[in-house]
Each structure stands twice: as C-alpha cells, then as structure tokens.
Image (cartoon, rainbow, N blue to C red; front, side, top):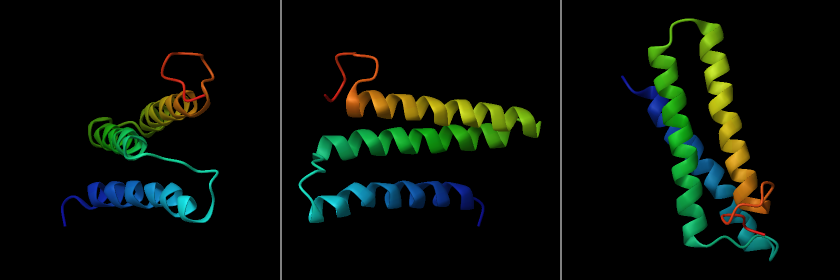
Length: 94
C-alpha cells in the first residue's frame, strides 16, 4: 500500500480524539463540544500532514527532525493557548 503513513496519521488522530471523548463519559472535568473536536481534529491532521510532507520532501535526516519538532512544538503551543490561554489571546479557553 502506497500511503501507509497517511493511514497511520489518520488512525493516530482518531485515537487521540477518542481520549477526551472517553473521558467525557466518566468525568465532568472534561467538557468538549463538537467544535472542540473539529478544531483539534484539524490541528492534529494538519500537523500530521505537514510532517508527512517534510518527510517526503526533505532529504537530510537532521533537517527532517528539526522541522518536524518545530511543527509539533507549534501544535503544542497552539493547543496550550486554546486550552488555558498562556499568551492571553482572545482565542484562549479560560
């Protein structure tokens, strides 16, 4: 199969989104709306696809690693801002 990594990316995104979905069944501490799932699905899928593009286009392994870490680091910062507002933007969830 030609696109094994793409299927793996989508599978990982689905599994990661199952975590808050399952948590919502057992606790009132997690309260995600459909919009929250949509935004995180887009962020996770976009991050995965950008890393896939980097792996396909960049030949030097050290550059691949640096670029993918930068993309994942950006995802983490955006996620933290949306969750608790570390930068105090209007998008903060707090």
